[in-house]
Image (tube, rainbow, N blue to C red; front, top):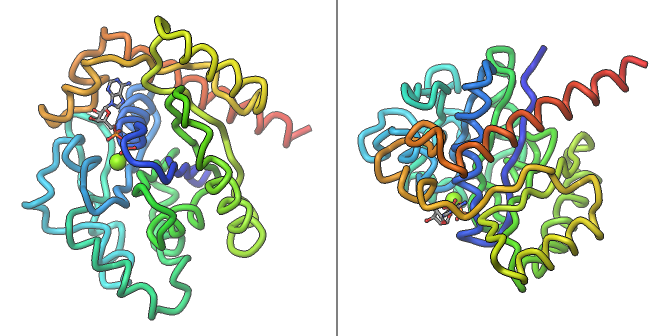
Length: 263
Ligand code: ADP
Ligand code: MG
């Protein structure tokens, strides 16, 4: 079985993409799955949050996208997280321009992951906060998109842009892609607005909203400064437990989908 590839995407910044990518990778790995986390953001937050120094890395995803290195040689291991990482740093900002001139510019990541896909059960892609060529590479490589959403007033604004981009990718570049689900993050149950927006999401998107809800939890925010995923830094925290539940939910959805395919 080749890896299931999930892009964590939302063109807004600060909505919890990286926190979700890192903790999902760590949760799946804790649940016994073989995981590769790909950092597609030049900010390198997923890299740092996995305990890998983005300034000191010899290999990153950047030469991999340009076809100058193989993913098998460029991948690193997050000892604490228990998963492999294709790291990123500022260098990746240049890729945006360099990729434009290359053949199959949207499919560079998809092509690069093929040789290592057998080594993993899951590949998690942490996308940058834009609908750039890097995000497009993520969407072209992925089987599914997971959209983290803050339950705030403006949460739904911009969602249609993202969904339209995914539809365009589906029609033109990657017929396999689908929205796997919306994940409610930084949820504050004491806020009436959070509950209202959450209800709205469920009313609109039904089963596409994951049952797991990630609470606002300071332990998740502290963890990156220790170079650890939240679920490693404080496994007992509410945020960690929620990400573990999310990992379990994703695995069980997948096995249900496989059973339906077999019928
Ligand atoms: P993005 O990758 O979408 O820009 P991040 O995952 O970096 O978003 O999150 C933005 C900020 O919010 C970070 O400082 C992060 O630590 C914090 N954060 C994310 N999720 C939570 C949460 N569930 N509880 C508390 N803080 C969070
Ligand atoms: Mg991020």
